[in-house]
Image: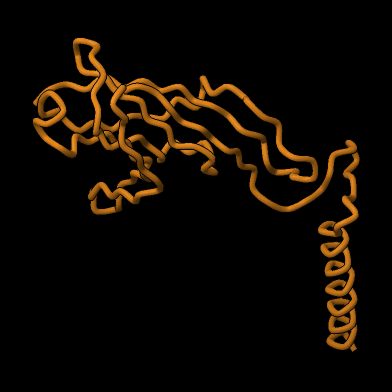
Length: 164
């Protein structure tokens, strides 16, 4: 008798929890007790990262590769990188990586590399730079209906390279 009761109790409880979970993810935007929309997902934002690459004297440097990469350490201590996007500086030393969706993640770094050696005024050391999310400026609100999108943010990040 007790086994039969537990079976029916578990069946009814499973059905109720299933309906409750379905109700929380409904498309008619249910509200919680504070009036906020209840939904599942992960917040994100669009970041436009731009700046100027200069040498130690303040002279702009062209043809420098600026890449956004995930930088992380494996359990064995090996440092790994995975590329997300990259660009090169123009004749004025300016770069821009725009309209990419990044979560402000500390493992995302700017990796700066001299790809043409002496041709751009000298050989420069590569550098890894933290992205300055704290000084990001909001330039556009998210479109209506995009509840997890926090909008578009611009980050001005100038980079100073040292010669080898």
